[in-house]
Structures are given as C-alpha cells and as structure tokens.
Image 1 (cartoon, rainbow, N blue to C red):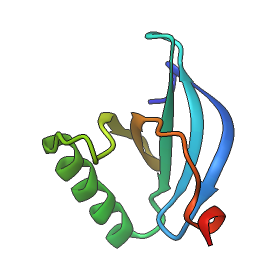
Image 2: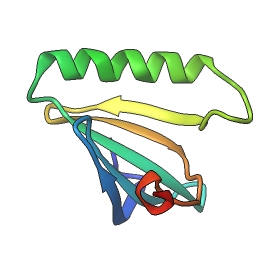
Image 3: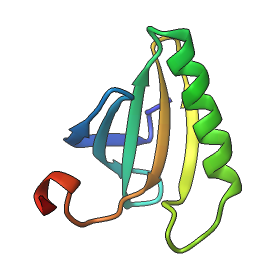
Length: 91
C-alpha cells in the first residue's frame, strides 16, 4: 500500500495509531500518513468508518483524505499535512 509514500519522520502517536510525515513520490508532495495496526478488530472497524466519513467531507476546517488502504498488518490513511502546533504545545 505504501509503495508511493516515503515515510520521513514520526509526527505523533495515540491510542488509535501513529502519524507520519511522508512524501508522496508519485505527486511530489508532502502528506500525513496515519498507520493503524489491525491487532484489534474493533479498532480496525472504527478506522474504516473514519476513512469513509472523512472521504465524504469537504470543508476548510477538515483535513482532506487523499487515500485509504490496508494490508494484512495495518490500515493506512493518507491525508493532507496541516502544519501547526500540537495540543500539548499549546498548554
């Protein structure tokens, strides 16, 4: 799934997955890739619902989802990269 994306550095992680700064080699752009491991079927189902919901939304305040895919190990959500501060930075 990630053949066209080169993971550059880890941006953060939470209970739901790990987010990476990545480079889309095909379109020569910087993106964010969320990697959600499929150890828990409930998390996998939730992640797939998130991808479907995100794909249907278009609003300036919502990160655009470019692509979603999965393999035997993880679900991958590729979105635009929004630069800024983390919540932790602001507190």
